[in-house]
Image (cartoon, rainbow, N blue to C red; front, side, top):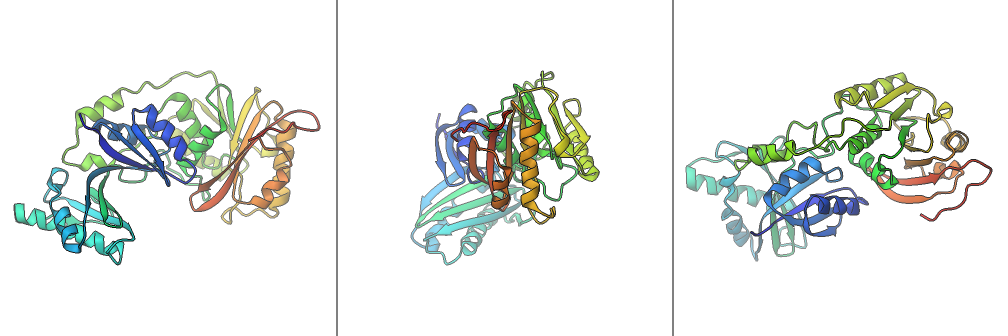
Length: 383
């Protein structure tokens, strides 16, 4: 049986995490591209990656690829695509396009030609056509054009997969769920010790870590995926995938979240309760400088304030206090933190054991890890 071709999108720097994850799910011939991984597999894999993947932002299914030499040949190729297999004549759809070095002056015009070709095919066959709905389409097409080659994809995800479905309260400087999941994975933490977020905000890092430890799929809380609205949606296959999950109901570790802002702590509590993880994630109001682990070793992963939405009077002094607290309160532990304030990071005053550039939304950040030891000097570790 021939494999289908898929493209899983992600954020810059997370491609290798996504690659490893996709191989675990059964992806074949996976290739890392810019902010994405191309792979092959059977159709069931499309559902599985959407449901399981912690690092994919969306999954595209390649349904047609062709060469063209004019607007007319492009139109004819698009019109030959059997869109009626996925989209009803009374349904809604949208087309997006990216193009480079092509005959089209703008990607918008290529998207318009694609839309016309799909509508004309429906008119010819049924005497009526589906409507365009850019906000909430039942079927989302994406066209990628490079020079004289076009690839047509169906977007199987709908809303970005970072929208897990457990956030009912949004912190003003919330960390993206995919970024939080990547922070946990890159730290090397695998659930063998307690995990602490001393500045937990909305609780995203704690929830993503608990989901990993409990084997809760990333899409477990979502109510919708794009492929639900396709005409060829196979409910039997979907049920088989979601019913095949074995969630751990007992683990020998705890997750601790602290914040000195009661409003933010309330947001975290609402999200933790929505995720039904209040038996595992323990939240308390406390200043980071007074937090100490119940057991060691422990892992700290956190997202200290660093942008204009959370004003700190003196970031350099604040980050020095973070470094002092890590050194004094967490011997025999590891700590990882993300920040876009590169100058303030220098004031942590500890030797790094890990460094990686990453993005939190539009903000370019650095992700640093530290081995914490008691005593005056911490030994240096190579990243």
